[in-house]
Every structure is written in structure tokens, then in C-alpha cells.
Image (tube, rainbow, N blue to C red; front, side, top):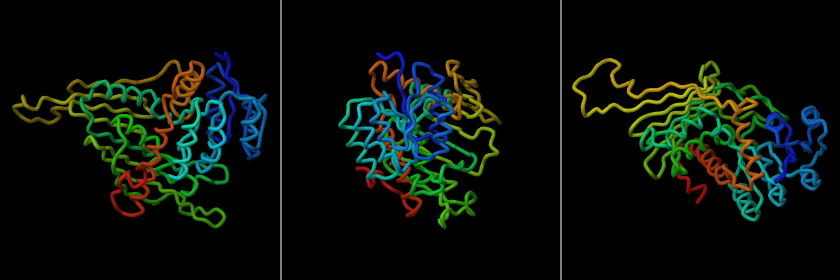
Length: 367
């Protein structure tokens, strides 16, 4: 078992550097190599890891012998190209969401991953946000009874600028419901324990980036949507996304409702709220406010072991500790490429539903 793992960063943009900050702080790891073709991103990354070797091509990094693990945080539409080489190596691989942007690339990645024995970890850190993790744990522990509905609301600011504005175009990102919302579809599947069987969505580009053109091409990322998922066990899930709703106090709200109660997590207030249903069979009358307080609890949820909060309430730190420990202890990945596949397929199905104005069966995309 190694005392200190050597990490390579493939893609040193804003998210790549966020990963670097977590790796630097958690201990038991050192960043020994960086790969990025963009000069300013290289320079910013070297400032975080002054002793690291620098490459412009990810293949040179993989061939260098300098790393035990790599973190892939390149633009979405390049993930398959990089993974083809990374998965053919014997280093541990952590790939940032979304896994890919097309069904064809997803199928290729699944094939490549099936032929390796080294650890492969899918970067879907939202499940590790402390109040979200506790809400999911309580639901899985029976606190709400049998889960019937899951809803997630994100009302937030527009997309941030990226290198060469790659995140302004659906053909590069996979679309908003892949780029941004694969996290949420993964949470829904995790809570319900299944992949959805059908998707219906409505959405559009109503406010953001309407006056933005790059090389003569109009930015085309959706900025609002409602997405409804149906599962084989009868459960349903819904996403309410608005990317011009930055005035919200809690911009991310997860609600899990079962036949016996409800649990909710709120971010950034990091609050958890739970309640139990009333026994309506014993009620004798109605009153204002009745039935709202039984078994209720409000709790602030933090993880005091987190050494770096970053941009995800400490979730990226927690995930990197788990990834590191899985490498050192030769244990399986807690988040697999299968999680990455299902979350992207749902997002692609939601875009298909919007584009075609109909319910889309998941089997149309992924048999």
C-alpha cells in the first residue's frame, strides 16, 4: 500500500483546479503531472503544483510513468477521447461528470472499461454533500416509508464562462440537462434504486446567453426546464431547473416523500428537515395548520472532517478521500461508470423529449 499517491490532472480549467485544491489538502497524495493544451490553464495549475511535470497532450502524461491515478476534467465532448487512452492504462481513473455526450460514446466507454481491472471512479459528487447524503441515508433507512416521489429544485445563476466558451453549445456539453443535471438524475436513481423507464420534459432558452455569439454561432444552452421521470416501481421524480433564479436563498432543494413521511435537504443553508405523516384514520376534525408538525425535525448538517469546502459544500473533498482510500485499500468504486451512463442517458432522453414534444422511453436510447 502506497504512503502517497501520485496524481495526474488531465484538464486544468476551473474544475481541474478545484480537484487540485482538494488533492493538495486531503493528504496522502501529491500532484506530479498536469496536462492541458491551454497555456493560461497550465500556468494557473502550475501555481497550485509547482513541482509537477507539464504536458500539452494527455497521452504523454499517461506514458510518463509519473502517476498512479489521473483526474479527467476536460470539456465534456472530449471525455471519450481521453478515456480511450486512460482506460487502456493501469492507473486509477477519476472522470468528471458527465461521462460523455452521446450514446455512441457511452457504449464505447462501457466496452473499454470492461476490459480493465484498475479502479475507475465516476465523478458525481452531489451525493456526498452532507445534508443530501443524510437525507438519502434516512430515506434508505426507512424514515419516509416506501419512497413515492423525489423532487429537486435548482434555481441558480447562469453558466460561468469557460475556456473558448465551450460550455455555451449543446453539441459540446450534451445540453444543459446532461451538463448540469446529470448530478440530479443520479440522485433520483440513487434514492429510488432504479433507472427511469420514461421521461417527459419541457424547457427552453428564455433569458440567458441570448445575445451571445461565438465564431458566428448562437449560444444554445437551455436555461430552464421541468423534467418528469417515471420508474417501473411506480415512483416518480421531477426536476425544476431555472438558471436565472439566482435570488433564491436556498438554491438547491431535494425533497423525498414516502407513504410515511418526508425528508428535505436545503443548500446552501445546509439544513435537513424531516416530518412524519399524521394518522388520518383517527382524525375527528379539521383545523388550520393541523397535520404539519408530527415528528418534525430541523437540523444543520456539516461534516467536520472536511478540510476544504470548495464550490460543492465539501462534497468534492469527501469524494476524493473516498477515491484515494479505494485505491490504497483495493476496494471497489462507490460511484461507477454505470452511474455515469444512466445519468447521461436520462439527460439525453429529456432533451429528446423537449425537441420532439413527447414522452420518451429510455429503451429508445439505451436498450
